[in-house]
Length: 402
Image (cartoon, rainbow, N blue to C red):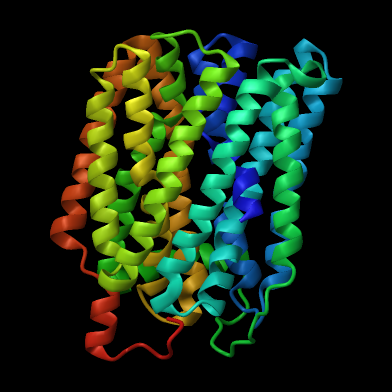
């Protein structure tokens, strides 16, 4: 819970984009920086899969990747206090890029650990409860961070102070993770190099066409990340972005995200993650339609409320569906394949988003995003089956953790 709380302060579509824009004054720089962060996550899931795919226990690797992510957050915080104006922006770019790299590895190590310690019929409520508690904690911290830390420019750099708080909270979560009780599994892949793991991905997609179609649908649905850094910048064209406003918008987003996560988790345990992914992608797409008509503070708040509803559920459903599309020993490589393509979209998306805003307008960016998400939704509805039901019907499930 604490790890999620700390990470959300950094990943929220408010504080970091606003900080980058305050330093650069450029939407393109905001998009480029977010693109570089996501670029760090493109190949690292494959490295993560080759690191843990053959291991009977993965907790130690999970702890290392999680610790490296937190070191980058500490770097973000300290650079704000000790670096001058000219060096600050490049330093932030470097720390975010390395954070993305270790985040990509953690997507594989953490989800592999989750698949081994949480039964399939409990993953929804466990993930939903964790995100619910983390979201409410994050909401309170976010409001205080905006209204008091940023508003008063605490310690001479309000944003640096926010990220220092994020590091402290996330580190508490790392300590809690160390007490996880992991059972040893015998169903693992042979030891493979990163190159061998990468070469195995095309065969995996060829042999599992349902997963391949899910692979494409999830990538198109994730094109919403192209617009993510620009929500708050577009809001800035409608109002003054004070620390209090940033805290308020972050708070309402986290409250709706965390509250809806409980519902999505319960629904997933009863009906499977496919229906959750369809519902959340539909709402996320409609939120972009709503954003086209925003003209006031109340409209922006309403958007962040609506956008918060699917944000946690879409990510949760995408990650957990990957765990169910095949055998246990292939989980790391499936996570690597899916994570890499989603992260590639996350890498080029903000860069393209910045170019679209620069060349055309914010509404043009949101229209392109809507079109891509609609294609992903069509593929998901028409050609991607519920993997859990198919697994149960064919009797191929080897144990209760697949």
